[in-house]
Length: 87
Image (tube, rainbow, N blue to C red; front, side):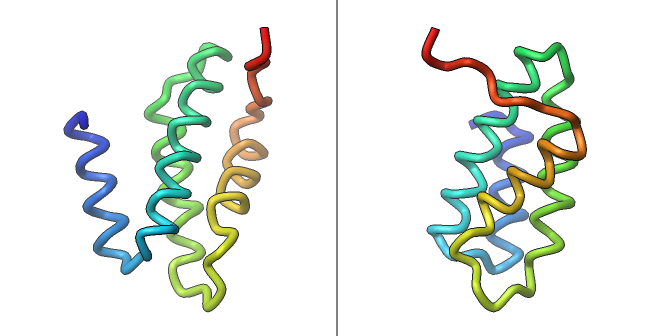
């Protein structure tokens, strides 16, 4: 794990996320970073947007869909479209 990703993982743990939510957020981060790189955007921008979006859900009682909600928010904020993964 790179230092930045280790820091982010520690931040997620400090937020009190369950293991499931941490896994959702990490999967979402990797997916969005790949799409950002394909679109010529800096992956660090994705990290900042994802961390901010996830922080808005930190007090949510239902956390099952946080990964999906965060992905949608970040895609909208950064104008990211999913890369074609079937090609």
